Image (cartoon, each protein chain N blue to C red):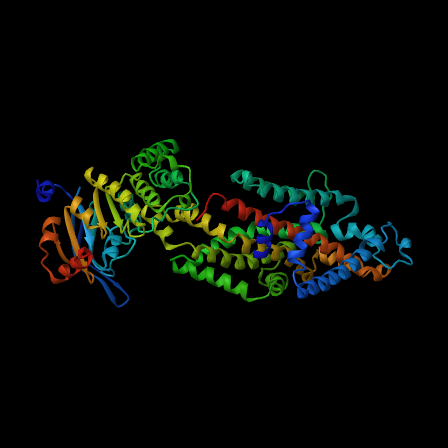
Length: 254
Length: 364
C-alpha cells in the first residue's frame, strides 16, 4: 500500500496556503503551500538558511507569518492568543537544543505542562510521564536534572515531554543535529517507533536514512520556497530539480 | 592558586607543624623576593592590628561611667554604655522602650525565619503582612492601653531596621513587576515602567527623599497629610525597586530564547511561563547583584536624616553633640559601624549560601 492510498481518505490536520514571511527586507518564506494529512510523516530538508525551520515554527506560531493562511485542526492561526494556546496543546515541538528546563527534574519537566495547561492532577500527570519515560527507555533517570544527562538522553526526555501533552502533531526541528554521532541512533529509534504508531510528524532533518525508512513525503526547500516534494523512493532515485540534485549529491556523496 | 594545590598534592609526611612549616617555605619564603614581601606585609599587618587592638581592647576602659576614662589612651566605652538607649531607640519614650526592643526582635526573627527555604510559602507571606500590622501597633500604640507614640519618635536601630526590611519586602515585588513590564509587548505598560525606572534611577536618593518630604505634600489637597515616615519609606521603595528592576531584567535577558520557546510550544500562558520557567532561573542567576542592592538599601536608609528622621547614624551623631562626650565620637561611630557591618555581612553570607544551595544538583 503506498502512502497515497493510506492517506487518501484522511482529514487534513494542517493547511498552509500562500504563506509569506519577511525578516525586515529579507523574504524568508515565499508562497508556501502545504497540506498535511492526519498520520502523515513528512521530512523537510534543504540547505541551511533555506527557511525549513522557520516554516515549521510558523505552524505553532513561534514565528509569525505575514501573508497567507495557516490552519491547524480547523483553527486559523492569527494574533488571537486564545487560539494560539489551543493550537499549541495539539502541536508540540522538539528542538535542536532540547530546551529542557534545567531547574526542574526530568519528571517535573514532563508534568509541568500537563498539570498547568491540561489541568491534570499531579498523580495522573506523573503516571503519564513515567509511561512515556519508559517508552523512550529512560525511566530510571526521572529524578535527575537535565544537566546530568547525555545529549541523546536529553533529547529523548524532550520527546517524552511533548508526548505527555498527547499532541496530534509533532514538529521536529533538526532533533539530531546537536548530538554526538553515537547518540543519533537512540533518538532516531524513538522517532521511528513514533512514526510507526501513526503520529503525524513534520521533521526537519538531514537524516536521509530516517526519511527513506518512515517518510510518506520528502519536501526539499531552498531560498524560502518548496522546490520539490515527492514520496521518498522517487525523491531520492529520481530528483527533478537541479538544486535538489545538487543538494542530494552533497549530502549523500560521501 | 596552582602552587597551593601542587604543594598540597605533594606527599606530606610528618606532623601538622611540619606540614605548615613546609607550606610556609613553599608559599611565603620560596625566593628572596617572596621572603622580603612576606616580611614587609607581616610588619604592616602587625602595625595595623596592634594599633586597633590596643585602642579597642588593651588600652580601653570598659567601665560604665566616664570618670574611669581619665588618663586613658584607648577607647572610652562608657560612651556606648551611657548612650546605647538613645542610639538604638532614638527619642522613643523611655518607659515604652520595651516596645522598640520587641519591634527589633520581631523584625530580626522574621528575617531569620524567611532565610530558611523550608518556610517559603504563601503562609510566610501572610505571616509577614499580619506581622507588619502588629508591628505598627506595637510601635505606634493607641490600642490595648498602649501609649500613643508618634512616628517622629521612632528612631535609631528600630527605624533603620524597619526602613530596610519593609523597603526590601516591597521593593522586590515592585521591581519584579517593573522588570516584567519593561519587557512587555504592551506599549502602554512598557512606557510607564521605563519612565518609572529611568526617573528613579536618574536622580540621587537624597532628591527622592526631599521630593517625598517637601514637594509631595504641596500637591496634596489642603487638609490631607501623609505621614513623613511613610513618604520616606515609599521613596526608598521606588528608588531601590528601579535599580532592582534592572538587575532582574538582566537576569531574564540571560535566559536563552530556547527556554521561552519551549514554554510557548507547550502552551503555557504568559504568567505560567514567567512564573514557572523564566523567573526561577533568572532570579537564581542574579542572587549576588540582588543582595548587593539590598545591602546598599540597608545602608542608604541613613540618608533619611536629611528629612529629619532619626535613624541609627543620626541618633549616634546627635549623641556626639552632647558637650560631655565631645571626645568620644570615634567610639560612637565604631559602635554603629559594627552594627551595620554585622547586618551587611549577614546578608552577604546568606547570598553565598543561597547561591550554593540552589545550584546543587542543577549542573549545567
